[in-house]
Image 1 (cartoon, one colour):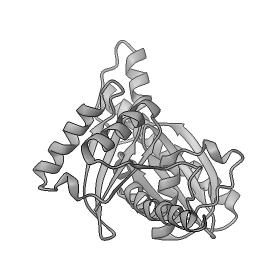
Image 2 (cartoon, rainbow, N blue to C red):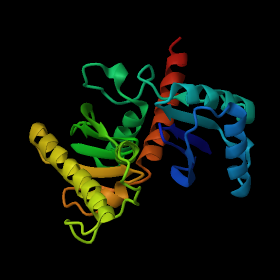
Image 3 (cartoon, rainbow, N blue to C red):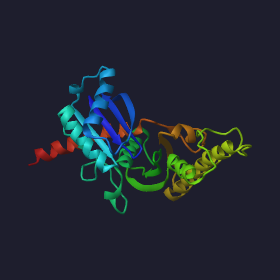
Image 4 (cartoon, rainbow, N blue to C red):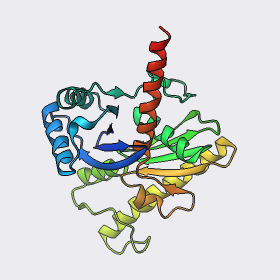
Length: 264
């Protein structure tokens, strides 16, 4: 079994991978103040409830965009699992050509979803990830990462609105019955729902024009089901794309390291 961990700015996805399949996964809140022992205790409790022995893991892979939390997780892996985790970075052999201006700036999460997306759906491909930021990543027909778009995420946009307006109350983000809201809550729902739906579709259209060829569009991330399900431009929703990518990267990096050792 492999333990795959994606550390995002808002949530942490933890998944158990076995025989090429995702056995179970959990989402935790990202807390920059939490220590290695606290994360370790939380994950070990989840494993205990799921009746998964923590010493049955052969390896751990982590993608992270939060360096302080990554440091705690590396310590946690060594202390609770006696495993030094593989960290996804451009310093490793990823089996993915990065055709961006500054490859070292491409986030580990975007690398993992691009790898998982191309493996599952082929290319050309556009991956839309609804996370803390909403990201759009383009993958070529031959599997190279071309670049993409970063836009403010839905939740942080909502937080900014409610924090800066005295009279607007927080609402749940659900599709409104009509575009024209008859009350303040429905007005807010319409603004966010159709605003982000329209943003997503326009960016997809422009990326497709720039690619000059028809591309499949796959959405992933926490709010993908809410926004992307009503768009005719989205071909599918895959909430496990990140974990699928981490599973592939684990074996690629491990194999590349083994071959490197063999050449010495």
